[in-house]
Image (cartoon, rainbow, N blue to C red):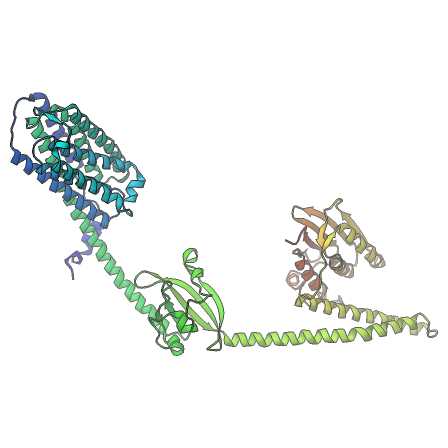
Length: 636
């Protein structure tokens, strides 16, 4: 086992709960404050003409070492970026890379204007790149656009080569060991840019409280101070040497703390790797246990890659149908297709639907079986989400459903045929009875007239039964024609009132209307709505012994409502669910005899549904009933 995994769990928990080591912020801050203070003291106390030490080899050694340190710092930040993603690491690395490249050319350049220009350009390039940390598009662009990285590095190389090859093309930047105004102004500009960069890292430090942001903030301030006070120094003067030494110390301090932070980061990374390995082992055991469960099931189960469509797993039940087809395309194995199935369920279980199960039914031609498929996305051993499918055979269920459908269709056809066949003889019998009752074929005794009257009523009842059955069959099969036009619902109700008032009068019941005036017209089939209202009113009159029936209309934002209220015996709570079912006849009490087909309200409900409306009842036993019919203005 690797050494990184040899830490005890106690050590790991300490690192995990304290992922950042405790840095001595105050010590680093004091160190970076002392260096500029010493620099200022040297500038103020030591005259420019005192302390000249011309040692080209020492200068070359310091600058070359500073260049190596800058490049090394850049490499560390690039490695940090690979381990823990940050929008600032790459831009910091780019700044130090450009500074390190130009400092390398500066260390090898002969004394002169080119020597000074390379030093100035190192500061300007670094400060300019650090200033770009304010620009989110540039920070983020470095992660996916390599040209943003390559171009500044190429410019740094080009400047170094150009100045080294053509020193006579460089403007005058030094005269008698003193820097010209142009040189001082360029250093001043670099100082301002470093100050602006420091402001950005103040914000970063406030947001992240990371040590590297604190260190970079201190370094930017130090760079800004040395660039702004550059005009006080002279070539080879004691101030000039102090500037180089302070810069080198700053690089070394940063390198030292970056190494320390990098070691801590590696410790955390090792811990994460250790925990990842433990999670992987735990996941592997769970995977093996899950596979064992799948293999013990009788239903075919397979798992496929949603991108490549390759089969990753088949349980034993699936292998009995399709063999060991792991690694082959699912659409080729299961359906003998050359390309992914047009009914593939990937869109139903991935993306926005991930985590949901998708259940669908499918008839497999080659197996001649019906299956109910349960699909879901699940994580595979490599962490990728894959398609899981279990196929449950429902062939017996489908055969039973088909048998029931065939039986129902046969029954419907028989009822329809029988009803049609009964219509003609019933009409003939009715006409014959009417002729006899009218005395056309001869006189009748009172007893004969009574018996024939009973016969006529029963024939009418039988005709209504046949008509109800035929209407219901047409509604169920979708063959009932509907003729939708705009109608005034109050006019329809008034016509029903006129036709049904005599029935209410015979039982000495009140029958009242309360119709809202100026109701908007409704798109409906007039005859069908008339049939619904007659059915409800007829039932109300039939069951009411005292009191009566009232019809009210009113409008709402979406349509109109018809309210039919009676003072009848009411409906039991357990009987409400039967009310709109076929061939159901309710009995308010044991002594009540009911007559009819039991289809009136069932037909009414189907008609209202076809109108995109609703019909329901509100009733309490012993307190009457209220039937509500809601019709929209349009059928959309």
